[in-house]
Image 1: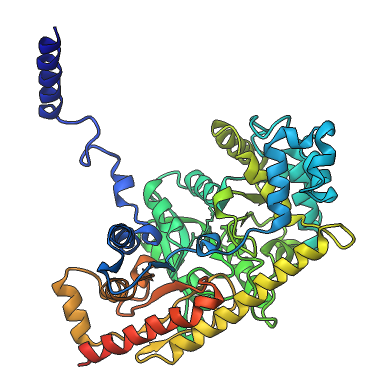
Image 2 (image 1 turned 90 degrees about the horizontal axis):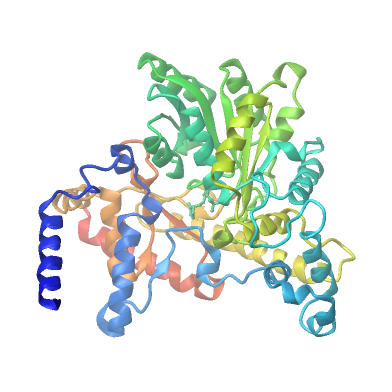
Length: 503
Ligand SMILES: Cc1ncc(COP(=O)(O)O)c(CN[C@@H]2CONC2=O)c1O
């Protein structure tokens, strides 16, 4: 019987391999195949391979570790979580810690205000357990808190019903891009360079990405004539543009918009009947006091009545700021002037996903509603927050200055976000060598940098760029104690690279 079984199972295997697979590269949705996401593309994939080699044989490569500067993932580079936030989330996920009979013991480990805050999520408008599905838009008690945050930040009230908590900003962005892309001739304007969530998602939903170029010579600013040009070019291709994506502060470029620039963008969207998608995930990552963050909602609400029907969708995330809670997958999207029947469709999409994850919802509330002056945990929170902010400011300035001191490299200031995006004037011989290796020139530079130093970055081609220009993106997230070493690795590599390929 066992022999029969083995023959039968072998014959079934043969038949399976002989029959073409139901799921083959050729048979899958080509829209998925067309999507590209360089932040975790070829260079980071190679970095993972090198890491496995180092794990097996530590001395086998010209460096001891990989420095992952390809992704804005602060806690992966040893940034500590904010104490109060993790105290509250841990209290919420272990119900025994909130039982009255355990209070005396729990108070030995947790401050009273953390226990008090944790209870809030299990009261009216909250949940019964972090393991239970919540309202499709997220817990009402948290959406009320976000509405209060928005009103205090902007000076204009909003309703919790216009807020949707999301599994990171990505989930919200993808839902809206999908909703917009009614057919392949619908266009969404996206910045170049851009965070590739946008171009990848537009490919996946069979929409048309309508690129508009940021002006590197003007600090990556957005020009209205360029927006007009891009939209007109799309119209000439019979593409009907429905939305404009703005990332402010910018990723990968780090620029921050001024109030006037934002007003002009709103006017452009209004006169062209475009939905404005405001990606504001880096709103707390502000390093230049002369360029403070303003939300698009605040600017819009401050403008004359004629603009007050502009359709605006704003996105926020727990992945950035001073907290870097990327893995918690928290965030929200905020609808302004979106038609009720369209909001109902967005609600349906959220309901199909059931609900955003509950720890991420709680982290979203903690992000926008941290300890206040007078709370037991306020001083610790304030010290932790300011320490991280001041360090990010120093690292941003230091990395940009370092890039500007390297041969054939120039770099615009990083006034916000988590990245520097230097421009490399690659010698022709390097461009030719890249062609010989069948890789794009800036990818060739990034690959050589990785193979020789362990520093993992993302080539500018992964964010798209003006043809004939070359860039790469590096985060400034390595801890300050490692920062000089990190910069030295890139600087020494660049000197050797330019020496080797100097025309
Ligand atoms: C501009 C922008 N929008 C949205 C997101 C998505 O964030 P969530 O984690 O909330 O989904 C990111 C993440 N930043 C990516 C990830 O790390 N490095 C990056 O460039 C981003 O940079």
